[in-house]
Image 1 (cartoon, rainbow, N blue to C red):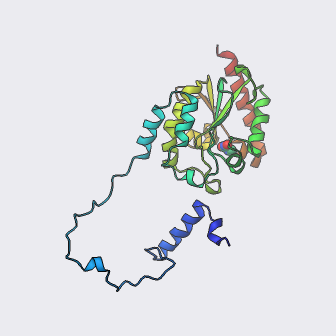
Image 2: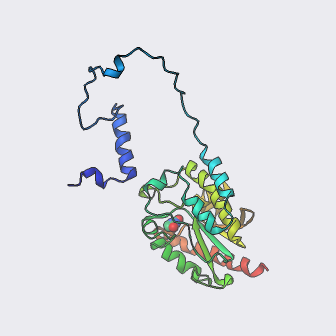
Image 3: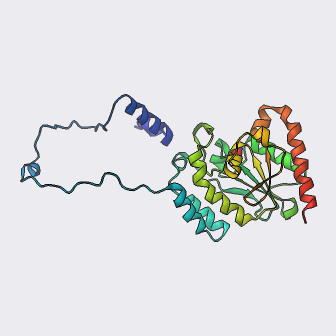
Length: 261
Ligand code: URA
């Protein structure tokens, strides 16, 4: 028979353990009782002075590890392999899939979103849920699609985070920081003419700024190229009145593509 614990995922298990620690539990209890008064035979021998254990092992700096790993990538494919093997981001443990990108890597426009949601985590592709369907419709309105073969009509789509955060919470600054070296390399390989930053998380990652409703609509620079911050399609689903401004931002993108050689 399956125990109820078999249904718990990484994050639920961790929350339970944190809760127990808060209640004061400071050691794991086994299935079998332990007699702590029993003196083991080997312990009765002459006392040996053990060498003092090191107080703490030096922990790897996750951002430094990410930078070294990302620098080793020589193609988009090797970048995906290297990033998916990166083990210092806890989100990986709770995610079903590694969500790298979708669309045409030759595209002139690269969209950077926040993180996979439920559908994206299940399917392993970015922006396939309701927000993604709206995103497809928005860009279709200016003649761009992730399925297009010609780079002038194509889109390439990725996220700051390749793993779904629990309950779709916003990625933490430390999580964003450890994915940034991979994202920068990702942009280098795709080499788009311009970038669309969809929402707060990509603005935090690429610009070091939040406040998408203030940033949107004004051209800026991200990863050394023109970038347009836009409201996230999930926000537009909740606030349909904001679609009007999103349309103005899309027209800006179209105009900029036309004027670039
Ligand atoms: N929201 C995002 O930012 N990215 C996705 O892939 C899906 C929803």
